[in-house]
Image (cartoon, rainbow, N blue to C red; front, side, top):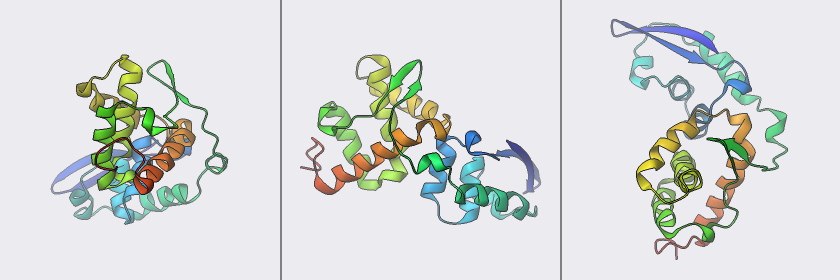
Length: 184
C-alpha cells in the first residue's frame, strides 16, 4: 500500500491506495464498480469524503493515474472465473447456486436490496448470506458486522465466488426466481 497525505479545509488526512491487486480489498473493488468518475473512485478506495478530495489543493494526478492504471489492468485470474469458494471466519464459503435454497427472511432482505441495484448492495447481500453460515442460525443483527468484515478481504481471493454470485443475483432479478413476494 502506498501512503498519501491530502491537505484540505485546513487539515491533513492520511490515506492509503493499493499498488497491486493483492492489496485491493472487496470494498475498494466495489468502489470501482459503483463509481464512475476517477475522483469518486479515489475517494471510495481511500475511504475519504469526496468533498474533502474536491476541495484539496494537493495534486491528485500522481495518486490517481497509477490507481486507474491498476484498475484498468485486471488480473488474468479474473478472466478465468471458476468459483471454488474462499475462507471466511475459519469456514469454507460458497455462495448459494440456487437462491431458492436460502431462508425466506434472507430472500426478503435481498429482494429489497436488489431493487436498488446489485453492485450497489453486493457487500450487504454477501453479509446476509454469510451470517447464518458463520453463526449456524439466522441472526439479522450480525449481518452488518459480517458485511464489514467481508469488505476487508482481498478481492483476488473472493472475486470468482463473488462474481458468480452477482451473476446469480442478476438472473434472479431478471427472471424473478427469488422466493420473495417482491419478485414473484
